[in-house]
Length: 125
Image (cartoon, rainbow, N blue to C red; front, side, top):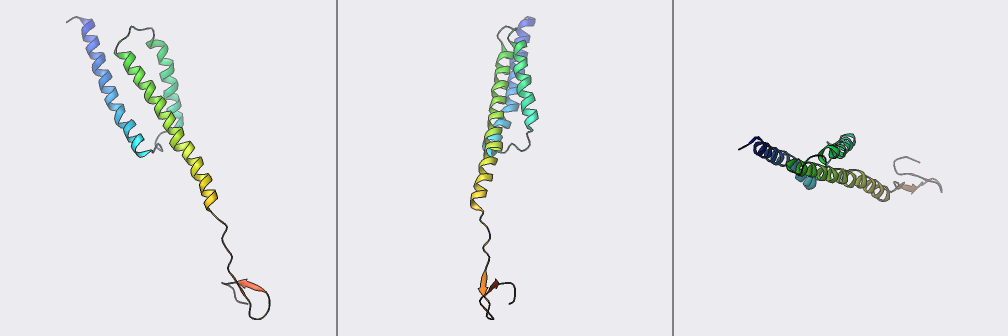
């Protein structure tokens, strides 16, 4: 086996390992819908890094690095989309629905036996 064949095998093995490491994270996010541990700055920088890395990858012949970079880019797009769906959009929906459901407290009053005025239940006349 020549050096080129060994490089291809190493590239395929590392691609499989990297993909296998990232899949559980994606499945956990899809299952729990919890992205509190992910910073939006991290997600943005990862996305920017992947997009700029494509300038290097497109200069290489098609191989395992293309598949790995395509997977990373797809995973990052999915993570950013899920972050906006579960963190930003759901927060806005839950806070607006909370505002609709919360009502002003009702003041309980009773007629004062000494006159026509009303007082709170807690107070005496």
